[in-house]
Length: 138
Image 1 (cartoon, rainbow, N blue to C red):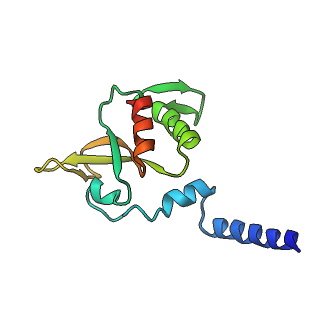
Image 2: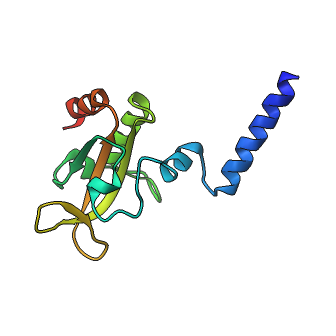
Image 3: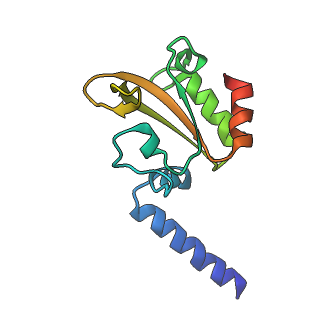
């Protein structure tokens, strides 16, 4: 009886993932995150559900450095290492995105697809995770 219910739940979950055209549940949750406004104009509004946002603006930072080239499709940067660390330590309470932004006249970062600079953003829900990340990567 329980095996049949488990198979039905597994079938429904796999069907939902297949209909959404995502590779795995991590990508599904990243795309359908309720704490993010995809139609926002600035970074603060985009991450409205995340209290702590860390922007990496310096191109000399470890996140922008190329760690290794492992052939076609195997180029790894520092932000890949940072993301793997976050997956291991923090799990679902963070978000990593790369945005092209520019500073408006008030100093707020606004999205701009034509010009601006590419910044890497790490957003966290918990202060403990944010401080743990800063101790390791800043």
